[in-house]
Length: 435
Image 1 (cartoon, rainbow, N blue to C red):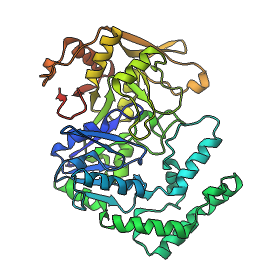
Image 2: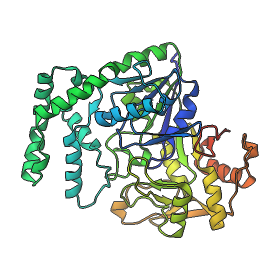
Image 3: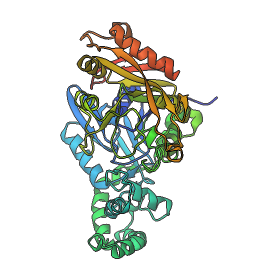
Image 4: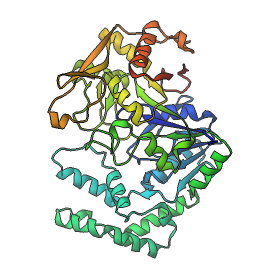
């Protein structure tokens, strides 16, 4: 019989749902915490014992003692950012050692020319994606083209590394030369020297993550996978082309870690009690542009962890969660910011929840994928909850929540057909109710 001891934490919307917080909570009794997709375009903020940690690559489980954290082959890594993050954690009193952190040697690197390519591609697009400019997409492109540089390459001689880089940069340098971006032309010898310095710092952290995962599965130890990005950013199933460059659905998250689906125990879909999005794209159908959007943004402190950009905000979208249910393989939901949505309701006098759409002459309860063809924009149909609520300081169990908060949660359960198991009432994981 398969040993099902793996829990995946995935995002239900456009990211920034609080996956890091949820994974940190779930990993308290785990042996291994994994990051398996994306790069440092994904920021997770962890609050522990009153202290805030802004992480971009390393899983939030690193804050716990005696846990092994893995960066797996599906991640793309900017070694400068990784080294800076390790140093930041060490300075904060979180000792980072190879006993706590292992980076797959097969994970690909984000090179300086990938960031330049990111900006160049965005410059020439008529419809801007709103990329973070971190070089994520171009790094994945080189990976698919089989010219990527990997963590294991940092352990080669400088000459071998230089030769690999020289092959990788040939087409990019031609593009830079022909588009007026001559200042971005890359030099293999210079890059090899820099990477060897970073490799010297990171060499003891580089290893085979597959072996460690296999051993933990065989020993029936709990593994938590901390997903990056979210359903609506998935390269195959999201709001193309306003998507990320990897597959942050549950299957893609498992694949990036090197784990087969038969080992999964539970998929936790994380969402906020409202919606937010960073980046461009017109498929945020419950977005509010005026006072309502501004109040949600300010009460929720909706500014990007990685970029600081103000997030676009709107109301909770049940059809989106319903669409995510199968694609993401959701077993249960974690809804964060239940405290925030209550305050928003007190401020505005109401809370909205979208439970269906009027689209193309019909009432539908899912997100349509042909809006570019129909030229129709789905119109949200809202359930209105009057007023809001304040969370009592001694709120520890579901029954302690205000009645209006319970009605809000139970309406979402009814509409999405997914059990809400985790309820976030604040930034710290101690402010979590398990229902």
